[in-house]
Length: 535
Image (cartoon, rainbow, N blue to C red; front, side, top):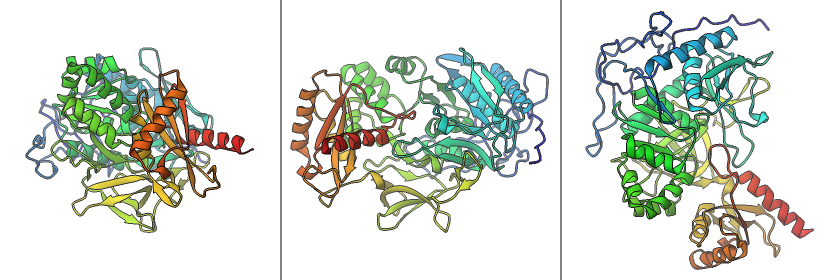
Protein backbone atom coordinates (compact mmCIF):
# COMPACT_ATOMS: atom_id res chain seq x y z
CA UNK A 1 0.00 0.00 0.00
CA UNK A 2 1.37 3.40 -0.93
CA UNK A 3 1.74 5.48 2.22
CA UNK A 4 -0.39 8.60 2.40
CA UNK A 5 1.43 11.93 2.66
CA UNK A 6 1.14 13.49 6.07
CA UNK A 7 -1.33 16.38 5.99
CA UNK A 8 -0.32 19.89 6.91
CA UNK A 9 -2.32 21.08 9.93
CA UNK A 10 -4.87 23.79 9.35
CA UNK A 11 -5.73 26.32 11.98
CA UNK A 12 -8.47 24.81 14.14
CA UNK A 13 -12.14 25.37 13.32
CA UNK A 14 -13.56 26.89 16.48
CA UNK A 15 -17.26 26.85 17.36
CA UNK A 16 -19.68 29.18 15.67
CA UNK A 17 -22.36 29.24 13.01
CA UNK A 18 -21.73 27.08 9.98
CA UNK A 19 -22.95 28.20 6.56
CA UNK A 20 -26.72 27.99 6.37
CA UNK A 21 -27.17 27.59 10.14
CA UNK A 22 -28.04 29.85 13.01
CA UNK A 23 -25.73 32.78 13.54
CA UNK A 24 -24.66 34.82 16.51
CA UNK A 25 -24.19 38.49 17.30
CA UNK A 26 -21.41 40.37 15.55
CA UNK A 27 -18.02 40.55 17.20
CA UNK A 28 -16.36 42.47 14.39
CA UNK A 29 -14.92 39.32 12.78
CA UNK A 30 -15.75 37.98 9.37
CA UNK A 31 -18.39 35.26 9.50
CA UNK A 32 -16.01 32.85 7.78
CA UNK A 33 -13.07 33.33 10.14
CA UNK A 34 -11.99 32.09 13.54
CA UNK A 35 -9.76 33.81 16.07
CA UNK A 36 -6.00 33.55 15.45
CA UNK A 37 -4.20 31.09 17.67
CA UNK A 38 -1.58 32.14 20.17
CA UNK A 39 1.17 30.85 17.90
CA UNK A 40 1.04 33.99 15.78
CA UNK A 41 -0.47 32.25 12.74
CA UNK A 42 -3.32 34.04 11.02
CA UNK A 43 -6.76 32.54 11.36
CA UNK A 44 -7.84 30.19 8.59
CA UNK A 45 -11.22 30.16 6.94
CA UNK A 46 -13.67 27.49 7.98
CA UNK A 47 -14.06 24.94 5.16
CA UNK A 48 -17.47 24.44 3.60
CA UNK A 49 -18.62 20.91 4.59
CA UNK A 50 -19.75 20.00 1.09
CA UNK A 51 -16.87 21.32 -1.00
CA UNK A 52 -13.96 21.34 1.41
CA UNK A 53 -13.12 24.89 0.22
CA UNK A 54 -13.32 27.99 2.42
CA UNK A 55 -16.89 29.16 2.71
CA UNK A 56 -17.90 32.65 1.69
CA UNK A 57 -19.25 34.92 4.42
CA UNK A 58 -23.00 34.85 4.86
CA UNK A 59 -24.64 37.61 2.86
CA UNK A 60 -28.28 37.20 3.74
CA UNK A 61 -30.66 35.72 6.26
CA UNK A 62 -30.06 32.06 7.04
CA UNK A 63 -33.02 29.79 6.35
CA UNK A 64 -34.85 28.87 9.52
CA UNK A 65 -37.72 26.57 10.53
CA UNK A 66 -41.37 27.39 10.01
CA UNK A 67 -42.76 30.17 12.16
CA UNK A 68 -43.60 29.19 15.71
CA UNK A 69 -45.18 32.03 17.65
CA UNK A 70 -44.88 30.20 20.98
CA UNK A 71 -41.10 29.79 20.64
CA UNK A 72 -38.30 32.28 20.23
CA UNK A 73 -37.72 33.79 16.76
CA UNK A 74 -35.05 32.34 14.49
CA UNK A 75 -31.67 34.04 14.96
CA UNK A 76 -30.30 36.55 12.48
CA UNK A 77 -27.01 35.96 10.68
CA UNK A 78 -23.94 37.69 12.04
CA UNK A 79 -20.25 37.09 12.62
CA UNK A 80 -18.70 34.13 14.39
CA UNK A 81 -18.48 34.62 18.18
CA UNK A 82 -15.68 33.49 20.43
CA UNK A 83 -16.40 29.96 21.70
CA UNK A 84 -17.90 29.71 25.15
CA UNK A 85 -17.11 26.53 27.03
CA UNK A 86 -17.28 25.56 30.70
CA UNK A 87 -16.05 22.13 31.81
CA UNK A 88 -17.02 20.75 35.22
CA UNK A 89 -17.82 24.26 36.39
CA UNK A 90 -14.53 25.82 35.21
CA UNK A 91 -14.65 28.31 32.35
CA UNK A 92 -12.29 27.57 29.44
CA UNK A 93 -11.23 30.92 27.92
CA UNK A 94 -11.38 31.10 24.14
CA UNK A 95 -7.64 31.72 23.95
CA UNK A 96 -6.83 28.62 25.96
CA UNK A 97 -9.18 26.51 23.86
CA UNK A 98 -7.53 27.86 20.71
CA UNK A 99 -4.07 26.95 21.99
CA UNK A 100 -5.18 23.44 22.99
CA UNK A 101 -6.79 22.79 19.61
CA UNK A 102 -3.81 24.21 17.72
CA UNK A 103 -1.28 22.15 19.66
CA UNK A 104 -3.35 18.99 19.42
CA UNK A 105 -3.84 19.42 15.66
CA UNK A 106 -0.06 19.75 15.23
CA UNK A 107 0.48 16.61 17.27
CA UNK A 108 -2.07 14.68 15.21
CA UNK A 109 -0.50 15.77 11.93
CA UNK A 110 2.94 14.78 13.17
CA UNK A 111 1.57 11.33 14.03
CA UNK A 112 0.27 10.91 10.48
CA UNK A 113 -3.42 11.52 11.15
CA UNK A 114 -5.40 13.05 8.30
CA UNK A 115 -7.89 12.07 5.60
CA UNK A 116 -8.38 8.32 5.83
CA UNK A 117 -6.05 8.03 8.85
CA UNK A 118 -8.11 8.19 12.00
CA UNK A 119 -7.78 9.65 15.49
CA UNK A 120 -9.14 7.66 18.43
CA UNK A 121 -10.61 9.50 21.41
CA UNK A 122 -9.34 7.23 24.16
CA UNK A 123 -10.76 9.05 27.18
CA UNK A 124 -14.01 10.50 28.49
CA UNK A 125 -12.84 13.83 29.89
CA UNK A 126 -15.12 16.46 28.29
CA UNK A 127 -12.35 19.02 27.69
CA UNK A 128 -10.19 16.47 25.86
CA UNK A 129 -13.25 15.32 23.92
CA UNK A 130 -14.13 18.82 22.72
CA UNK A 131 -10.52 19.54 21.73
CA UNK A 132 -10.26 16.16 19.97
CA UNK A 133 -13.34 16.89 17.85
CA UNK A 134 -12.04 20.29 16.77
CA UNK A 135 -8.43 19.16 16.20
CA UNK A 136 -9.44 16.08 14.19
CA UNK A 137 -11.56 18.27 11.94
CA UNK A 138 -8.66 20.70 11.56
CA UNK A 139 -6.41 18.00 10.06
CA UNK A 140 -9.26 16.28 8.19
CA UNK A 141 -8.93 13.05 10.18
CA UNK A 142 -11.85 10.74 11.01
CA UNK A 143 -12.60 10.80 14.75
CA UNK A 144 -13.09 7.37 16.31
CA UNK A 145 -15.32 7.60 19.36
CA UNK A 146 -14.22 4.26 20.76
CA UNK A 147 -15.75 2.46 23.67
CA UNK A 148 -13.83 0.84 26.49
CA UNK A 149 -14.21 -2.71 25.18
CA UNK A 150 -11.29 -3.96 23.04
CA UNK A 151 -13.77 -5.28 20.49
CA UNK A 152 -14.74 -1.70 19.74
CA UNK A 153 -11.24 -0.52 18.87
CA UNK A 154 -10.24 0.43 15.34
CA UNK A 155 -6.53 0.82 14.53
CA UNK A 156 -5.89 4.62 14.51
CA UNK A 157 -2.98 6.72 13.34
CA UNK A 158 -3.04 8.53 16.71
CA UNK A 159 -4.85 8.46 20.02
CA UNK A 160 -5.91 11.29 22.30
CA UNK A 161 -5.77 10.76 26.04
CA UNK A 162 -6.16 13.25 28.89
CA UNK A 163 -4.21 14.32 31.91
CA UNK A 164 -5.97 14.53 35.23
CA UNK A 165 -6.97 18.11 34.43
CA UNK A 166 -8.36 17.13 31.03
CA UNK A 167 -5.51 18.50 28.93
CA UNK A 168 -5.39 16.38 25.76
CA UNK A 169 -2.27 14.37 25.04
CA UNK A 170 -1.54 12.93 21.59
CA UNK A 171 0.09 9.49 21.62
CA UNK A 172 1.15 7.21 18.81
CA UNK A 173 -1.46 4.99 17.23
CA UNK A 174 -1.20 1.57 15.63
CA UNK A 175 1.83 0.56 13.62
CA UNK A 176 -0.53 -0.13 10.72
CA UNK A 177 -3.54 2.20 10.96
CA UNK A 178 -6.76 1.13 9.30
CA UNK A 179 -7.30 2.75 5.92
CA UNK A 180 -10.67 4.46 6.51
CA UNK A 181 -12.72 5.71 3.52
CA UNK A 182 -11.93 9.38 2.90
CA UNK A 183 -15.55 10.55 3.30
CA UNK A 184 -15.73 9.31 6.90
CA UNK A 185 -15.54 12.15 9.44
CA UNK A 186 -16.55 10.28 12.60
CA UNK A 187 -17.21 6.74 13.76
CA UNK A 188 -19.68 6.06 16.57
CA UNK A 189 -20.46 2.70 18.13
CA UNK A 190 -24.01 1.53 18.62
CA UNK A 191 -24.85 0.87 22.25
CA UNK A 192 -24.94 -2.90 21.96
CA UNK A 193 -27.94 -2.93 24.30
CA UNK A 194 -29.73 -5.60 22.27
CA UNK A 195 -26.90 -7.17 20.25
CA UNK A 196 -23.32 -6.81 19.13
CA UNK A 197 -22.19 -3.16 18.82
CA UNK A 198 -21.46 -1.88 15.32
CA UNK A 199 -19.20 0.91 14.08
CA UNK A 200 -21.27 3.67 12.44
CA UNK A 201 -19.33 5.67 9.83
CA UNK A 202 -20.65 9.22 9.34
CA UNK A 203 -19.60 11.86 6.77
CA UNK A 204 -18.90 15.51 7.62
CA UNK A 205 -22.00 16.72 5.77
CA UNK A 206 -24.18 14.52 7.99
CA UNK A 207 -22.65 15.95 11.16
CA UNK A 208 -23.14 19.50 9.92
CA UNK A 209 -26.77 18.90 8.94
CA UNK A 210 -27.47 17.28 12.29
CA UNK A 211 -26.19 20.29 14.21
CA UNK A 212 -28.08 22.81 12.09
CA UNK A 213 -31.36 20.88 11.91
CA UNK A 214 -31.43 20.10 15.63
CA UNK A 215 -30.61 23.70 16.55
CA UNK A 216 -33.32 24.97 14.21
CA UNK A 217 -35.98 22.62 15.63
CA UNK A 218 -35.15 23.47 19.26
CA UNK A 219 -34.62 27.19 18.42
CA UNK A 220 -31.19 27.22 20.04
CA UNK A 221 -29.28 30.50 19.68
CA UNK A 222 -26.14 32.06 21.08
CA UNK A 223 -28.25 33.19 24.08
CA UNK A 224 -28.69 29.57 25.26
CA UNK A 225 -26.65 27.81 27.90
CA UNK A 226 -26.50 24.07 27.28
CA UNK A 227 -25.84 21.74 30.22
CA UNK A 228 -24.53 18.37 29.04
CA UNK A 229 -23.84 15.73 31.71
CA UNK A 230 -23.47 13.01 29.05
CA UNK A 231 -20.40 11.38 27.46
CA UNK A 232 -19.27 13.02 24.22
CA UNK A 233 -18.17 9.63 22.91
CA UNK A 234 -21.80 8.67 22.30
CA UNK A 235 -23.93 9.97 19.45
CA UNK A 236 -26.41 11.79 21.72
CA UNK A 237 -23.78 13.78 23.58
CA UNK A 238 -21.85 14.48 20.39
CA UNK A 239 -25.01 15.84 18.73
CA UNK A 240 -25.19 18.53 21.44
CA UNK A 241 -21.58 19.42 20.62
CA UNK A 242 -22.66 19.94 17.00
CA UNK A 243 -25.49 22.23 18.14
CA UNK A 244 -22.93 24.24 20.12
CA UNK A 245 -20.80 24.58 17.02
CA UNK A 246 -23.76 25.58 14.87
CA UNK A 247 -25.08 28.30 17.18
CA UNK A 248 -22.37 29.77 19.39
CA UNK A 249 -24.35 28.83 22.51
CA UNK A 250 -22.47 28.41 25.81
CA UNK A 251 -21.72 24.72 26.44
CA UNK A 252 -21.44 23.44 30.00
CA UNK A 253 -19.89 19.98 29.62
CA UNK A 254 -19.78 17.69 32.65
CA UNK A 255 -17.71 14.57 33.32
CA UNK A 256 -20.86 12.78 34.39
CA UNK A 257 -24.30 13.16 35.91
CA UNK A 258 -24.43 13.98 39.61
CA UNK A 259 -27.77 15.02 41.03
CA UNK A 260 -26.57 17.79 43.37
CA UNK A 261 -24.08 19.16 40.84
CA UNK A 262 -26.74 19.35 38.14
CA UNK A 263 -29.14 21.22 40.40
CA UNK A 264 -26.35 23.56 41.47
CA UNK A 265 -25.58 24.40 37.84
CA UNK A 266 -29.25 25.12 37.21
CA UNK A 267 -29.37 27.39 40.25
CA UNK A 268 -26.21 29.39 39.54
CA UNK A 269 -25.36 29.36 35.82
CA UNK A 270 -28.52 30.51 34.06
CA UNK A 271 -28.82 27.19 32.21
CA UNK A 272 -31.58 27.17 29.58
CA UNK A 273 -31.21 23.63 28.18
CA UNK A 274 -30.51 20.29 29.86
CA UNK A 275 -29.96 16.99 28.06
CA UNK A 276 -30.09 13.58 29.69
CA UNK A 277 -31.27 9.99 29.58
CA UNK A 278 -34.50 8.70 31.19
CA UNK A 279 -32.66 7.27 34.21
CA UNK A 280 -31.33 10.76 34.96
CA UNK A 281 -34.77 12.36 34.70
CA UNK A 282 -36.23 9.69 36.94
CA UNK A 283 -33.76 10.74 39.66
CA UNK A 284 -34.53 14.41 39.05
CA UNK A 285 -38.28 13.77 39.24
CA UNK A 286 -37.85 11.97 42.57
CA UNK A 287 -35.81 14.90 43.91
CA UNK A 288 -38.37 17.41 42.61
CA UNK A 289 -41.11 15.53 44.45
CA UNK A 290 -39.15 16.02 47.69
CA UNK A 291 -37.80 19.52 47.08
CA UNK A 292 -39.98 22.32 45.64
CA UNK A 293 -36.84 24.35 44.83
CA UNK A 294 -35.57 21.55 42.57
CA UNK A 295 -38.96 21.44 40.86
CA UNK A 296 -38.78 25.18 40.18
CA UNK A 297 -35.27 24.92 38.74
CA UNK A 298 -36.33 22.16 36.35
CA UNK A 299 -39.49 24.01 35.34
CA UNK A 300 -37.43 27.12 34.60
CA UNK A 301 -35.51 25.44 31.78
CA UNK A 302 -36.53 26.21 28.21
CA UNK A 303 -35.45 22.76 26.97
CA UNK A 304 -35.47 19.49 28.90
CA UNK A 305 -34.10 17.14 26.26
CA UNK A 306 -34.51 13.42 26.93
CA UNK A 307 -32.96 10.72 24.73
CA UNK A 308 -30.69 7.71 24.68
CA UNK A 309 -33.48 5.31 25.58
CA UNK A 310 -37.29 5.05 25.59
CA UNK A 311 -39.10 7.73 27.59
CA UNK A 312 -42.02 5.82 29.05
CA UNK A 313 -45.45 7.43 29.50
CA UNK A 314 -45.18 6.88 33.25
CA UNK A 315 -41.92 8.83 33.55
CA UNK A 316 -43.25 11.60 31.31
CA UNK A 317 -46.36 11.91 33.46
CA UNK A 318 -44.45 11.72 36.76
CA UNK A 319 -42.01 14.45 35.71
CA UNK A 320 -44.83 16.68 34.47
CA UNK A 321 -46.78 16.16 37.70
CA UNK A 322 -43.95 17.22 40.03
CA UNK A 323 -42.48 20.06 37.94
CA UNK A 324 -45.42 21.30 35.86
CA UNK A 325 -43.12 21.17 32.83
CA UNK A 326 -42.80 18.56 30.05
CA UNK A 327 -39.80 16.60 28.88
CA UNK A 328 -38.77 17.10 25.25
CA UNK A 329 -38.10 13.62 23.95
CA UNK A 330 -37.46 12.52 20.41
CA UNK A 331 -36.38 9.65 18.26
CA UNK A 332 -32.94 8.93 16.95
CA UNK A 333 -30.32 6.30 16.34
CA UNK A 334 -26.59 6.47 15.75
CA UNK A 335 -27.07 5.38 12.14
CA UNK A 336 -29.24 8.45 11.44
CA UNK A 337 -27.21 11.23 12.94
CA UNK A 338 -28.73 10.56 15.61
CA UNK A 339 -31.82 12.82 15.71
CA UNK A 340 -34.70 11.97 13.39
CA UNK A 341 -37.67 13.62 15.13
CA UNK A 342 -37.95 15.89 18.17
CA UNK A 343 -40.58 17.33 20.45
CA UNK A 344 -39.63 20.99 20.87
CA UNK A 345 -40.78 23.94 22.96
CA UNK A 346 -43.91 25.28 21.30
CA UNK A 347 -44.18 22.17 19.12
CA UNK A 348 -44.93 19.40 21.57
CA UNK A 349 -47.19 16.40 20.96
CA UNK A 350 -47.25 13.94 23.90
CA UNK A 351 -47.61 10.35 22.83
CA UNK A 352 -45.35 10.92 19.83
CA UNK A 353 -41.59 11.45 19.53
CA UNK A 354 -42.23 14.73 17.77
CA UNK A 355 -41.97 16.13 14.28
CA UNK A 356 -39.39 15.00 11.75
CA UNK A 357 -36.41 17.36 11.46
CA UNK A 358 -36.13 19.58 8.41
CA UNK A 359 -34.86 17.55 5.47
CA UNK A 360 -35.81 14.20 7.04
CA UNK A 361 -38.42 11.81 5.66
CA UNK A 362 -39.89 8.64 7.15
CA UNK A 363 -42.00 5.83 5.74
CA UNK A 364 -43.22 2.42 6.90
CA UNK A 365 -42.16 -0.75 5.14
CA UNK A 366 -42.62 -4.50 5.40
CA UNK A 367 -45.10 -6.62 7.38
CA UNK A 368 -43.87 -5.16 10.69
CA UNK A 369 -44.44 -1.60 9.47
CA UNK A 370 -40.79 -0.87 10.09
CA UNK A 371 -39.75 2.78 10.20
CA UNK A 372 -37.44 3.65 7.29
CA UNK A 373 -35.63 6.99 7.14
CA UNK A 374 -34.15 9.21 4.44
CA UNK A 375 -32.03 12.06 5.77
CA UNK A 376 -28.92 14.14 5.01
CA UNK A 377 -27.66 12.87 8.41
CA UNK A 378 -27.54 9.17 7.49
CA UNK A 379 -24.41 7.13 7.99
CA UNK A 380 -22.36 5.87 5.06
CA UNK A 381 -22.59 2.34 6.44
CA UNK A 382 -21.16 0.12 9.16
CA UNK A 383 -17.37 0.26 9.13
CA UNK A 384 -15.56 -3.09 9.20
CA UNK A 385 -12.82 -2.66 11.87
CA UNK A 386 -10.63 -5.20 10.09
CA UNK A 387 -10.85 -4.11 6.45
CA UNK A 388 -12.19 -0.55 6.47
CA UNK A 389 -15.02 -1.59 4.17
CA UNK A 390 -18.54 -0.19 4.51
CA UNK A 391 -21.50 -2.51 5.07
CA UNK A 392 -24.68 -1.09 3.49
CA UNK A 393 -27.02 -3.96 4.36
CA UNK A 394 -29.19 -1.79 6.68
CA UNK A 395 -30.26 0.24 3.63
CA UNK A 396 -33.08 -0.56 1.23
CA UNK A 397 -32.40 -0.83 -2.50
CA UNK A 398 -33.48 2.81 -2.93
CA UNK A 399 -31.25 4.09 -0.13
CA UNK A 400 -33.58 4.38 2.88
CA UNK A 401 -32.28 3.29 6.30
CA UNK A 402 -34.11 0.40 7.93
CA UNK A 403 -34.26 1.35 11.61
CA UNK A 404 -35.43 -1.93 13.16
CA UNK A 405 -38.20 -0.02 14.94
CA UNK A 406 -41.92 -0.19 14.33
CA UNK A 407 -44.27 2.76 14.49
CA UNK A 408 -46.40 5.22 12.56
CA UNK A 409 -45.98 8.61 10.88
CA UNK A 410 -48.71 11.21 10.41
CA UNK A 411 -49.32 13.33 7.34
CA UNK A 412 -47.84 16.38 9.11
CA UNK A 413 -44.61 14.54 9.92
CA UNK A 414 -45.13 13.47 13.53
CA UNK A 415 -43.62 10.13 14.41
CA UNK A 416 -44.80 7.46 16.85
CA UNK A 417 -42.43 4.64 17.79
CA UNK A 418 -43.80 1.42 19.24
CA UNK A 419 -40.46 -0.25 19.94
CA UNK A 420 -37.71 -2.45 18.57
CA UNK A 421 -39.09 -5.15 16.30
CA UNK A 422 -36.78 -7.78 17.77
CA UNK A 423 -37.61 -6.79 21.36
CA UNK A 424 -41.40 -7.00 21.05
CA UNK A 425 -42.54 -10.00 23.09
CA UNK A 426 -45.01 -12.57 21.77
CA UNK A 427 -46.89 -14.50 24.45
CA UNK A 428 -49.67 -16.94 23.54
CA UNK A 429 -49.85 -15.26 20.14
CA UNK A 430 -50.33 -11.81 21.70
CA UNK A 431 -47.76 -9.06 21.24
CA UNK A 432 -46.49 -7.35 24.38
CA UNK A 433 -44.44 -4.13 24.46
CA UNK A 434 -41.71 -4.37 27.13
CA UNK A 435 -42.27 -0.72 28.08
CA UNK A 436 -45.88 -1.43 29.12
CA UNK A 437 -44.74 -4.16 31.51
CA UNK A 438 -41.86 -2.03 32.78
CA UNK A 439 -44.22 0.81 33.69
CA UNK A 440 -46.42 -1.63 35.62
CA UNK A 441 -43.40 -3.01 37.50
CA UNK A 442 -42.12 0.50 38.38
CA UNK A 443 -45.43 1.25 40.09
CA UNK A 444 -44.56 -1.21 42.87
CA UNK A 445 -43.23 0.25 46.11
CA UNK A 446 -39.46 0.05 46.46
CA UNK A 447 -38.78 -0.31 42.72
CA UNK A 448 -36.24 2.21 41.42
CA UNK A 449 -36.18 0.96 37.84
CA UNK A 450 -37.09 -2.07 35.76
CA UNK A 451 -36.18 -3.80 32.52
CA UNK A 452 -38.21 -6.54 30.86
CA UNK A 453 -36.95 -9.16 28.40
CA UNK A 454 -38.34 -12.31 26.86
CA UNK A 455 -36.91 -15.81 26.69
CA UNK A 456 -38.08 -17.61 23.59
CA UNK A 457 -39.29 -21.19 24.05
CA UNK A 458 -38.94 -20.98 27.80
CA UNK A 459 -42.58 -21.30 28.78
CA UNK A 460 -43.01 -23.29 31.97
CA UNK A 461 -46.07 -25.09 30.58
CA UNK A 462 -44.74 -25.77 27.11
CA UNK A 463 -46.10 -22.48 25.79
CA UNK A 464 -44.85 -21.26 22.46
CA UNK A 465 -43.46 -17.76 22.39
CA UNK A 466 -41.71 -15.70 25.04
CA UNK A 467 -41.53 -16.06 28.77
CA UNK A 468 -41.60 -12.58 30.30
CA UNK A 469 -38.80 -11.79 32.76
CA UNK A 470 -38.69 -8.63 34.87
CA UNK A 471 -35.38 -7.41 36.25
CA UNK A 472 -35.89 -4.94 39.07
CA UNK A 473 -33.52 -2.39 40.58
CA UNK A 474 -34.23 -1.82 44.27
CA UNK A 475 -32.38 -0.67 47.38
CA UNK A 476 -34.70 -2.79 49.56
CA UNK A 477 -32.70 -5.79 50.88
CA UNK A 478 -35.88 -7.89 51.19
CA UNK A 479 -35.95 -9.07 47.58
CA UNK A 480 -38.83 -11.48 48.20
CA UNK A 481 -41.05 -8.66 49.44
CA UNK A 482 -40.14 -6.49 46.44
CA UNK A 483 -40.94 -9.33 44.04
CA UNK A 484 -44.30 -9.89 45.75
CA UNK A 485 -45.18 -6.21 45.41
CA UNK A 486 -44.19 -6.31 41.72
CA UNK A 487 -46.48 -9.30 41.14
CA UNK A 488 -49.37 -7.50 42.84
CA UNK A 489 -48.81 -4.29 40.86
CA UNK A 490 -48.84 -6.25 37.59
CA UNK A 491 -52.03 -8.11 38.56
CA UNK A 492 -53.75 -4.75 39.01
CA UNK A 493 -52.73 -3.13 35.73
CA UNK A 494 -51.86 -5.56 32.92
CA UNK A 495 -53.54 -8.67 31.45
CA UNK A 496 -52.42 -12.16 32.54
CA UNK A 497 -50.43 -13.01 29.41
CA UNK A 498 -48.25 -9.88 29.82
CA UNK A 499 -47.35 -10.44 33.46
CA UNK A 500 -43.78 -11.49 34.27
CA UNK A 501 -43.34 -15.19 34.98
CA UNK A 502 -40.07 -14.42 36.76
CA UNK A 503 -38.94 -11.40 38.79
CA UNK A 504 -35.28 -10.93 39.67
CA UNK A 505 -34.41 -8.13 42.11
CA UNK A 506 -30.92 -6.63 42.26
CA UNK A 507 -29.25 -3.51 43.68
CA UNK A 508 -28.36 -2.16 40.23
CA UNK A 509 -29.37 -3.07 36.69
CA UNK A 510 -26.58 -3.41 34.10
CA UNK A 511 -26.37 -0.55 31.63
CA UNK A 512 -24.32 0.26 28.58
CA UNK A 513 -21.97 3.25 28.42
CA UNK A 514 -24.76 5.38 26.95
CA UNK A 515 -27.10 4.67 29.88
CA UNK A 516 -29.39 2.15 28.20
CA UNK A 517 -30.30 -1.13 29.85
CA UNK A 518 -27.95 -3.88 28.71
CA UNK A 519 -30.76 -6.08 27.46
CA UNK A 520 -28.38 -8.50 25.79
CA UNK A 521 -26.82 -9.29 29.18
CA UNK A 522 -30.21 -9.49 30.88
CA UNK A 523 -31.52 -11.82 28.20
CA UNK A 524 -28.43 -13.99 28.66
CA UNK A 525 -29.01 -14.20 32.41
CA UNK A 526 -32.66 -15.10 31.90
CA UNK A 527 -31.86 -17.73 29.26
CA UNK A 528 -29.15 -19.27 31.42
CA UNK A 529 -31.39 -19.46 34.47
CA UNK A 530 -34.22 -20.97 32.41
CA UNK A 531 -31.87 -23.57 30.95
CA UNK A 532 -30.63 -24.57 34.41
CA UNK A 533 -34.21 -24.83 35.67
CA UNK A 534 -35.21 -27.00 32.72
CA UNK A 535 -32.24 -29.30 33.28
